[in-house]
Image 1 (cartoon, rainbow, N blue to C red):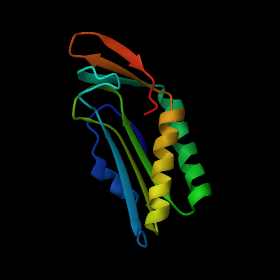
Image 2: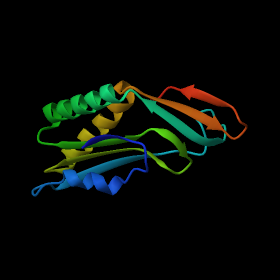
Image 3: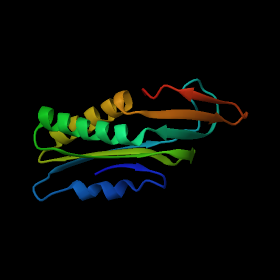
Length: 137
């Protein structure tokens, strides 16, 4: 399950990757914070993506996770458009027979998604200013 969403992200929907025999299911949900990395008050974020390459990156990351951690399934949903503080920007899940593999695969997928997917973030501040930001944290 890989998706670029224009509407609210339902993190519970990622449970669709679960199979009988899975004992570990780990999710990461990234939420729009009220403060930027520099401490400024944030009104919201705006995300843009190059969707064909984003989907390809999601699939490549999931394939690499399987190579590294065994029989794991990955789900990634990333929102684009304008988001307000408190809304879900990204949800990543990993399912596996055991928790260690699920945790490792989820962490790997989140880190690689932030590093490689062609998704860009713009912070909008309460003072009316805005700024494109690196999407590394």
